[in-house]
Length: 186
DNA sequence: GCTTTAGACGTAT
DNA sequence: ATACGTCTAAAGC
Image (cartoon, rainbow, N blue to C red):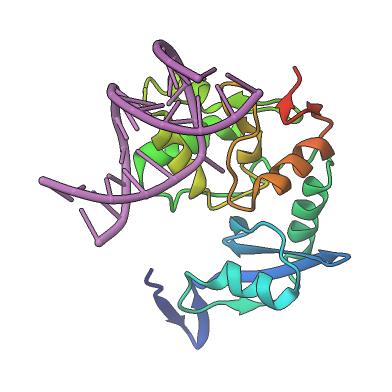
């Protein structure tokens, strides 16, 4: 990833993202913001340091500031089951893989408290690549905001998750999804 | 219910 | 060309 720095009349306008954090108890959230849009989120970490490390790893340079703490707080609240609209607050235009973008757009449409299967996502984009859907979702740059936790297996079991199945289950239950013996009830 | 197996596809190397 | 993946369906126990 390359960032260009432009100098206009002595004022430096850089393209680097601003990273803000927010925590609730021992869960630390972070967002990376560029042009007032969230371009990356992470699943919560056990310390602020880990959160910052995790979210910044792909950036050559970045700023840490509390400027967008409210965005990080929104992500935290969403994690804990609040229905929050991130419409127009995030941006995944940097996802330059068409397949992945189609998958993410589809996932972004899943309403709060509802689930879709990997197969349904694949069918929605006219593909049979169920596994590739899983792979693409695994690279979701905006977990929580793009609700990849709402994508489950066709047998209605939870399925994999970057942050572990337990975390996926927890987020779903926070949203009011009922899970009995590892199966989504719907 | 469980495990194994083959299948189908997109991506990274 | 090869290997892998937040998968699926079918077959066997």
